[in-house]
Each structure stands twice: as C-alpha cells, then as structure tokens.
Amino acid sequence: MFSGSLVAIATPMHVHGAIDFDAWTRLLEFHAASGTSGIVVAGTTGESPTLTDAELRELTLRACTQLRGRLRVIAGAGTSSTASTVARVQWLRELPIDGLLIVTPAYNRPSQEGLFQHFAAAAAAAAGTPVLLYNVPSRTAVDLKPATAARLSRVAGIVGLKEAVPESARVRELVGACAAGFTILSGDDATAREAIAAGARGVISVTANVAPRQMSQMVAAALAGDQERARTLDAPLAALHRDLFLEANPIPVKWLLAQMGLMPAGLRLPLTPLAEEYRAPLQAAARAGGVLT
Image (cartoon, rainbow, N blue to C red; front, top):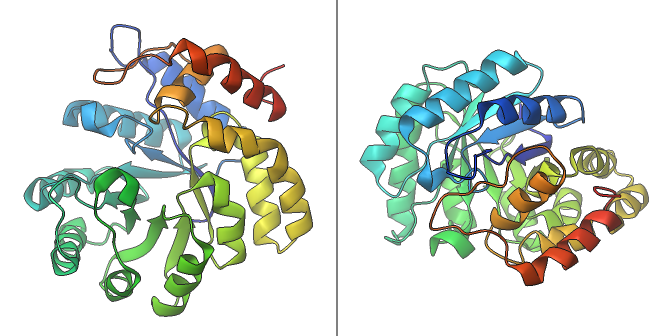
C-alpha cells in the first residue's frame, strides 16, 4: 500500500503564522504532477507540534478532496500521550485517509514495553485504518528497537514503519524480523537509496518537498534494482539531503520552498527564519539538485 517516494509535506504559512490554504492547493498539485506517491500531513516537516486539531482536520480533508486517490494521504496522529494519540486517531479514522503515521512519544522516554502498548492502543483505536509507526530517535530521545518493531508488525492494523535511523544494517534486521508483508520505509534521505537496497520499499522524504520528481525517479530506479541509475540520480541531491538540515527541519526546506515561489516564508515560533549564513550554501545545494537555476 505504501511505497515509492512519499513526502513529509511542509505546511504553508503566511508570515504571521496563519495557514495559507491557497499555497496548500498549489503544493498538492506540484506533488501530484511530479511523481510523488503519497503525502504525510502534519509530520515533523509539517510543524505538527504547532498545529491545532482543527487545522490538522482541515489540511487533511482538503488533501483528500483535492487528490481524490491520485496520491496516498497519510495523517500524522502521534503525540507524547497515549490517551491524546488515541483520541486523535479516533477522529482522524473517520476522514477518507489512506493511513495514519504515529511517532514514538517524545520526551517521556518510555520503555520498549511502553512503546509496544502505546502503539497497540493506537492501532486498536484506528479500527482498521492502516497504521505506520515512526521511529526518529534524534527527535524523540527514544528508539523503537527492531525486536519491538517485530512484535508490533504482528499487531492487527499496523502495516509498516518509517525508520529514521540511518543504518542499512538496521533495515536488513527489520526486514528479516518483521512479519511478511510489513513495509519498511526510510526516514532519512541521505541513506534512502541504501535502505531500499537493504529491503525498504521507499522513503518518506524531506528532500521531496523541493525535488519531488528527482526523488521519485531515484526511488523508482532503486526499487527496480538498478543501483547504478539510482546512484546517478541520487548524486546531485546529496548536498540537498545534507543542507536541508543546516538548521532544524523544516526551517531550511520552508525557506527554499519560498525561494521557489511555492509558498510564503512563514513559520511558527519557536522556529525562526533560516539564518543568513546558511542561505548561500542552501541555494548552491538547490542549484546542484536542479531545484533552482
């Protein structure tokens, strides 16, 4: 169900912080025309911690209505509380989405058993809506270990994992340990090609926000087993994979999207605009990747 190049899509905002729904429409069409296979609404790149439930609902509904099955629509549902995650899942499951992305709870650092119970409760609340787990220790200060992911892969409704630990050995371990048909997706652009070679079925990407066609073509080549072509397509994107993290995501990618004319430069505090010292390097990376001329 979930494969290829999916985008952790940025949430366009005016400079005063209000969501720019006209830009949202443009972004969705940009991806539909560029080979992106799915979007994640309100992921990390979408500034999920600052969005209200009402905003999440509106963004998701507009995406489902506009895309009408052309792309998969996955809604970010995870919080640091199991109770609030379950509550969010219960109303999101009523929308015409294709799946839910649920991140490991940040800050409170649960045990592996706590993680298992958290995700199992969310899957039960999803009532059949497919659930993707999301492991990103660099953000959350907790690591969903492969053994726990393997247990969860056998829980009804949990269909895959976005793994942002940039190690192909971990991807191979996950593929070997998890249930047949369980989908592993890379959560790290710089190592996505190697992750696919190790058994991942695609990537949920930051780089695809600005280079969707390039990422789609690279992932397609990697999935087809054409590693030489995938390497050739990935090489011009290497600087983007790196420099989109010169400051905390999504600060650089939103600045670059504004340079591309796709959205305003708005962010919500505590995020602040990209520092002047990082703008020239990011522009150079974008030119190398064919994003800016």
